[in-house]
Every structure is written in C-alpha cells, then in structure tokens.
Length: 108
Image (cartoon, rainbow, N blue to C red):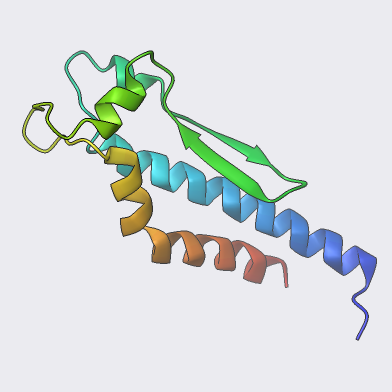
C-alpha cells in the first residue's frame, strides 16, 4: 500500500514536533537531578532537533558537564546525582513514546 506523500509529510511533521517536545521533557526531568551549586550547568541544558532525520539531542554545555555526568565518585547536594541525563532518559522512555504518539495522533 502506497502512502500519500502529503500524509507522509503531515505524519513526519507531527513526529518531529513530538520528538522536540519529548526532548524538552527529558531535559526538564534531567534538570531535577543535575548537580547544582550555582545553576551554571543546569542553565546550559538545551535540546536540538533534526526534523529531517527525526533525531533529537539533549545536552549540557560546560567544560565539566561530561565529568559531572560520568564520575560516580563526585559528591553532590541531596537529590543531585551523576548520570543525571542518562537516568532521565531511561526513566522517561514511556513518557517519550507517549509524547510522540500523542503528537502524531493529533494530526490523524
């Protein structure tokens, strides 16, 4: 069965919007646990979206972001942890799927 090119564009656009919303959701959840002394690391959190490839990224832009994320020996304030981004992504997989599905369903 062939899919109408217009329908494909509509679904692709909806999927991209959903993916962008899902990335923002993961960033918000990650920010709840990101190490926080002055807020610098948290304030550099951002998302990016490649609509054509349907790929999204969540990142933090400080020279020490990767160290804070990976070094499990560092001590953090209560509720703040290493692996803040990885943990958020793993914990929110179902929510990410639901956000994307809702965006597509809205267009159908």
